[in-house]
Image (cartoon, rainbow, N blue to C red):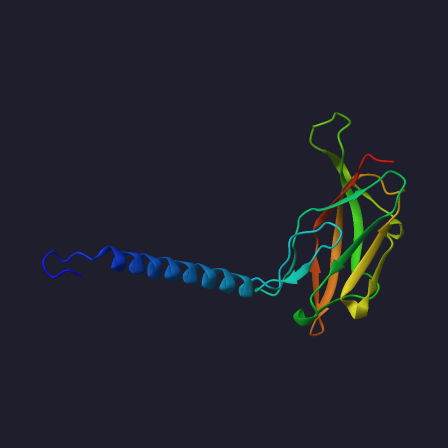
Length: 179
């Protein structure tokens, strides 16, 4: 700095500017890394692999609602529900995921919302082929082509520390165009 004017010379201004840029970049990196560390256990929703998590209040939550299950006409759709091993939650062996009723059907008019049924239709849960695997960490459902498209209610049955946990979300099954 020059004593007479109190202003920094061009070289000192350049150094200060570089220090400021470096400080801002360091703060930005710290925020990003801190954010990543906090969210390392989460991943983006994937209809083929819904995540069932234990909320802070002790209830179950599915990371997407409804679960949208896409399949080609005449083909089986495979969906794998998962829980984290660290959560202590385990799906029940015989009924970890149970599809219970058809709630809505697709509109016959393209672009129109689904049609809510006056009465939910019960479904044959065997057509959904759900089996608990990996010591209760996964439930794999092989949904038969006989299951018509629509919005279905299903139940997640699990335990944590011997206590039952139940959740009743919904899943949308849609057929896609294709060969």
